[in-house]
Length: 272
Image (tube, rainbow, N blue to C red; front, side):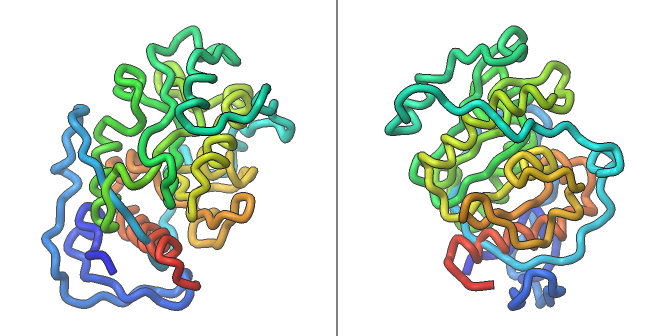
């Protein structure tokens, strides 16, 4: 089994995984040096590659105001357009097919179309919300401060970044990093579905509310979706916090670590 996640554990001891993700995880003496959140730079820089596995789950903390379900979040229509033409045979071919997309207004404001990056045959697929300013400039997902934290998380799972595949629901940056709009999600949803079909992951990890709502077709808050066994078309799916939320609120780190261990167990094929 991998060592504790240094970025999230914060002096937490190595946990014993329980038979049920809802059970509380016990902790013993820590054997690895913690990597503080503060060590993650606020500017983008070179991102190292990584590799990963899974874990149990505790009770979720109160969500951020933006994560509350009382105000119904945007949701894609039930009937999203399918990718037209012959199905692509590879991620590279699919990227080439859609990289000039003009399905929604984001095509007019983007700098780069951010398709995704990583192992095209990955067992673990991480799905975020949308590109940010750094991603829009570089054309790669998760390259800013949140991306560097995600890299550390993947490394703490015992993997390298090039061993997993990382993408977002939206392939273009919403202006000002605003929340995705329903028509934007509807336009990009077929692309995400096709990416999942081509990668054929063993487990999907949704980072944040919007990715989770899009794949689960739910309007529930993040706190209600966490800690439950989900599936997307037969693929186990784990809901956790977006790395950006962990940078804003350290109180979420312990629960995020439990989510990451759950992903590791699913990756290893451990029955929950």
